[in-house]
Length: 272
Image (cartoon, rainbow, N blue to C red):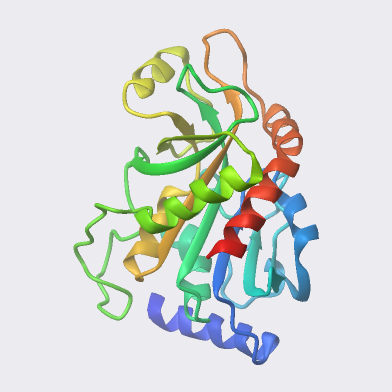
C-alpha cells in the first residue's frame, strides 16, 4: 500500500516538472466568492486540479474555480489555490489537506488561508473582514488521525499559536494602511453542509466569533509541517435568529467584499 508520504512526493514531483524552476514563497487559499483576487497575479502557470496526479477528483463547488495559479504579487512568488476540497463533499480530512502538504514540498513556509464565514459575534456585519486569532475544531476529527509518519511532522502537535503572532501584527498594519476596519476573533469549523440551527448558533456564539466549513484542517496540517499561518474570514451572513443563510448569499457577500479583500491581501503580501 502506497503511503501518504509517497503520494505527496509523487504529486509534488509532478508539479515541479510543470512549474520548472518557479519556487513559491507563499500559499494563498481563496475561499468562496473571493476568486476575483486572481486578477492581481502576474500569472506564470495555471494547472487545473483535474490534471494533477493524486489530487482528489470532484465536481467544483460554486465559487471555487478548481486550479492552482503560480505567479507573482508585489514581486513575491506565490501559489494560489483557487478552490479547496471540503469534508462535506465526502472527502477525508487527509484528502482535504493533501494539497497543502503537496504545496509545502515546493518550498513556501507561509500559508494565507481565507474563507467565507457566518458571523456569530453580534458586533459583526455582513461584509466585515475578520483576522482569525484562534480556532476551534468542531468537526469531530483531525487530519492527523491515523498512522503516524515522522517524515510528515510530529505525532503530538502543539496548537498554542496556530496563527502566527508576528504575522498577525503585519495583517493589522496592512489593514490600517488599506483603511480597512478589521475585526478579530475565533473561527469555529463544522463539517457541514448544513448551516447552523438557531440553538447551535447560540451555543457556538459562547465559544467563538465566526463559523464555517473549512480552514481548520488546513491550518492544523500547515502547523504540522512548520508553516506560519495567517487566517482571514469574510463575514458573509450574520446569525441573528431571523435570516435563512444560503450559498447564493455567501457568494454575493463575498463579491461585495472582494475589492477590500484584494486590497488587504495585496498589502499583506507586500509587507511580508
